View (cartoon, rainbow, N blue to C red):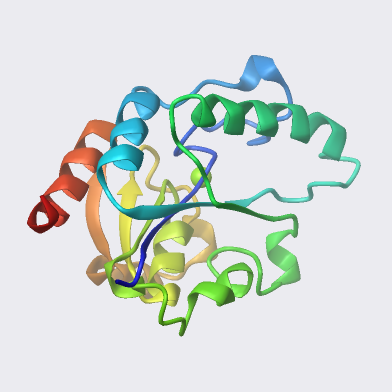
Length: 194
Ligand SMILES: [Mg+2]
């Protein structure tokens, strides 16, 4: 049976966003999303999704966001999830800036082509989980569905036109601020397997 995927954003989804710079480059900025461990543990253990992390880290590796401030926090995040039985089979990090219009940057799918037109994966039954409209646009571009953590509905909106936003309404399956609701939603989607 083809595998379903959860394409999961990092900042604002697994961790809280870190304004004003939106760079998780030190441990004092790291706060995990409330109850994310409880419900990601259940999602990872009860359902058959492959878990992927997909994140834009604008300018990572430049002077404004050196790699040596990024990796310690990033590895800590991954280890914390591993310890709760949550394994990301792949982590995709785009380091470009929006103005560069590179096709690996979300919402473009350049980092994820191995999962598209691939009979091993059931993209239609897969989800992007993220806190920005650009995550929902990624879902649209992949041909899957979106779960939008809508804590700040303006986030990521500046890269989209009003028409883009209207077109996303068919892609967004759930809007929520709570991981419990994401878990219950996925449970209802998967009830036929239990
Ligand atoms: Mg985010």
